[in-house]
Length: 395
Image 1 (cartoon, rainbow, N blue to C red):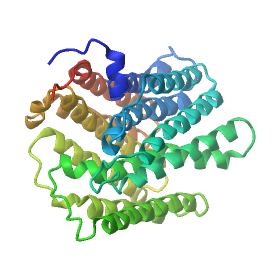
Image 2: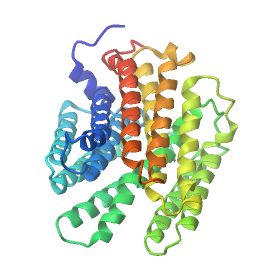
Image 3: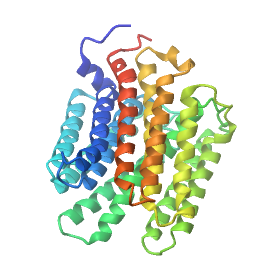
């Protein structure tokens, strides 16, 4: 097991090697904007910049890195070319650079272009697939991945329309929901239906006598769940019933995880990685249920979903990707104290950030503490995991 002589060639074959570190750096910068602002080092209120760096920078880096690595393997198609990776990196850096200089309209436009270009790379591979996937084609839950990307494209387009004065604030509100909430939720549900059973040692459901029919049925269930969640999010912008729309979203997501992922069929987790996955799924569902108890603390509930759910799941799955692809797979059969500590820091950050919205007197201090805890967890994870992106599993 030796470091590869050409890192860029290795990153083209498996884009996570370069996009995971970039995403982590974007996330750390995004959360540290709050302490920098409250201490006077950053003079502009960082609400928009923070949100863009966390969703387009942090989550964007990990989503593009993961799918760019997984999709060619699942479809039996060639890995990304150097030209494809360079185009992704150019648009990614352009997006973050524009946001950093305060040109959020240009940054969102570049991210929209990045999503469209990236989708073209993935769609081409699915069309020429040679038979990857569980049933000779991509996993049925991956229709939600495509649905999620369409929601992200529509969401960013809504933001661009508003930022260029072509539409009212309702476009920005809807666009923000599609991009910041639904995109990642659909990725969790879609990729999770394929990946979570494998990581949690859940026995796969039998395909039945007609695998093609089973695939279509599962794909249709995925489409129905996605359409219901989008409809409920649209409905939330029309009627003032956050409790009921939130409860309905929770029931759809929980039902999908129970039926498609068969979440309750897993054994009691004894290792760090599956425990973190269960914790992340539980916090996503808790965040979806948040409006039932606190309907007017929407932002607090979203941070339960993002920090405790999306971010924790992202780094947990990334741990599996980096260790297994780097030839360190034997570590996955052991307890991983660094991952447990990262989870504890993230959950603590979630408590401070979400809890801070319940008291104006301590809100700024809570944001500061939550930001520092999240950054500490991210740095710890990066220190223990990211050096391994330079290595290749010889098998």
